Image 1: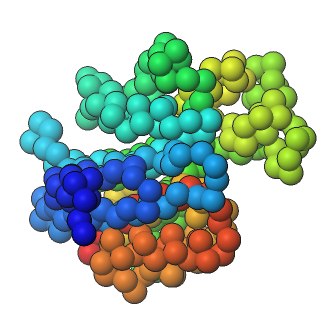
Image 2 (image 1 turned 180 degrees about the vertical axis):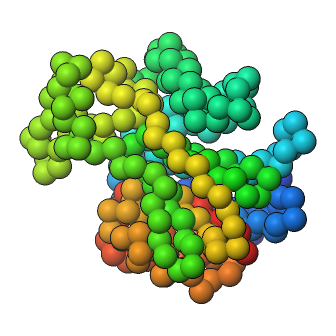
Amino acid sequence: MTTGREILHKMKVKAGFGSSAPDTAAKGKAKATKNHISHGSHLVKGKTNHPMEDYLVTDFKRVKDHELGLFAIFDGHLGHDVANFLQNNLFDNILKQADFWSETRKAIKRAYKKTDDEILDKVKQLGRGGSTAVTAILIDGHKLVVANVGDSRAVLCKNGVAEQLSVDHEPSKEKRDIESRGGFVSNLPGDVPRVDGQLAVARAFGDKSLKLHLSSEPDVEVKTVDESTEFMILASDGIWKVMTNKEAVESIRHIKDANVAAKRLIDEAVSRKSKDDISCIVVRFQ
């Protein structure tokens, strides 16, 4: 029997929005200039004691005579409020930057900083948790702008070859910067490097108690979508902990339905014993 919640979810999907409900799927199609872009998404709650902490965005809108595809994965930690805030506010902050169209990289970096400042100012409402983020903005079907903080990842498939567009911000790789801010990187407790022995990523939104030692500056990559560009994967680290970029691309390259492809990736990650919350978006350009 279809519940009221499921009906509401289907209405959101038709409008092009993803939801954060566990084990749900979203699918949509939109036209950007002369290209037909299809997208699908899927989320599954991990085998943890806390509520689902992943959120996503899949949306198309027209701004200043430009067709924009907006896609994002937000992987929260120590609570879901920061990721939920990002879902509702980050793209608005990006598009409000006056120089978004002329200085896109600078505008996105400034918007990430502004959003992080807002989160820190609202720590009493949002809590002291945080979130990673990977965002992708498709402009007029041919210009792709990807930004990220943390270890959620964007991977592009061009002519069957996987190309990572984001940067995994690992504490071991940014140890010098963390130490220059007065922090430290330690494998204890646990078995992976963590900022101040607590957080396994070197960059994130929020995390008030670690902010002096933690960056929220994104890496930004700009790519042209051409005839060789097949699809893009955005996913939280629940997939990338158990699959390489090449394995992820090859596992869904033959699947034309983006929604089915997103679910297939998550099913494969679960079969490989991934225990984390997992969220995934697939955008097909052909």
